[in-house]
Image (cartoon, rainbow, N blue to C red; front, side, top):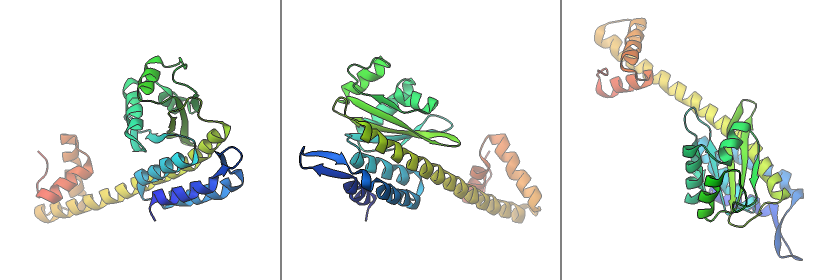
Length: 250
């Protein structure tokens, strides 16, 4: 079963059709079980991209939104690893370039921001005009935060004004808490995996140098380190080049 199938099934238990109003309402009795299953699904996701893709797909089903997306904080410019529509990618990328809008404030101040109508909200005029031109009227940005700080923002968007009620925001907050832990965990595992791979590459490169130049391990490592510093190249990249070409970078 694909992620989208699992999230659709989970969301179906959250949302019921009220026969009196013919409207979707949140089944609060089922929320705990649904989010427990979502937590397991996120934990079993392979890597950051699959994790956040599960988040946005679930958000699209569990909250009354037209689109959803996730922006993740990095040492440089934030990344946009998952969106449900190209419109979201355009909205998020515009904010990251202009440094204006609720995404920027939500990420820096670690707080949830609700824009009930981009027609009347005057906090970020240029951003509001951009989002409105894309057909979006309501925006809800929820920070993905852990004890170590904000790891990103979950953005929910609707083509209708004032589309999100208290139930929608509550679901988004719970989803964001689960997603925060899952993303932080996925990133940590990726970093550990990359560190292990780097050590293997360096070890292989050291073996090549030791055999070719009849030097010991300490001397081989010193050679790699010197080339890394002289060429301003990461040590693992120097090692990879030596393994691939049998030559050190110039």
